[in-house]
Length: 315
Image (cartoon, rainbow, N blue to C red; front, side, top):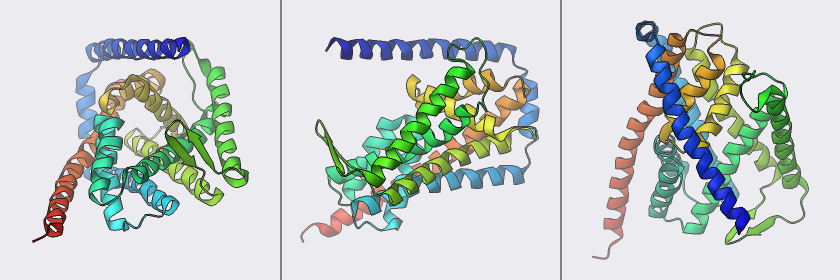
């Protein structure tokens, strides 16, 4: 009990430090930033380049939505892809902009329950999706960190050597998961009120591949928006670090966290103006435009669900 209480307070303190540190860093950045350079960098984007970036963003959303198709194979429910993909797309867009509890959890339960799935089935979809996302993350982050493709500032407490050790640990976890899926005799595990059944090795490999692909495409979009001299593995590594920081900080859309980490780790490679412009363009293409599309899709889904309920009512 004492250990749990200490863990809770440590997590709150860590989150509070993020909430204090990020505004301070952003204020310092905004005060010293050449906003004319940011404006010129934004105006320099060609419509064709932004269109390619939008295609990359939509490809990432399609990959993420495929997590739920993978879960359909794992669970065996009969909802068609034309119903699964819009739900997954809406939930991902809301998840990115309004935290996991709003988009990833609450909205997923609401939309899937209206399509006839029960709570345990939705929970298993959610669980497999989380595993897919973070197993792919651990494979990529483990490789990037273990190969020391991201150089941390000397002032950071972890350091490049510590990050490399974390990379080896992440790779070991990913490998252990795949081995367990392929060889474990006990396939079902119980934890409190939750039950987890290990997928087959083939499905687990698909999980890791899909999860890694999604993170890779996200980084590719940022790399596309940065100047030509960007080193893609470094961009990918910085994105992976910033996403974990965003999860810890619990800030909707990771607002300010992404920018702080990128500016802290890549400020020596790019001008601050061009880097901020790239991140603003990324947020527009990957967060705001998909959110608008998701809101419209959600309204359509709600309208269809309402019509279905009317048809099902006895005359």
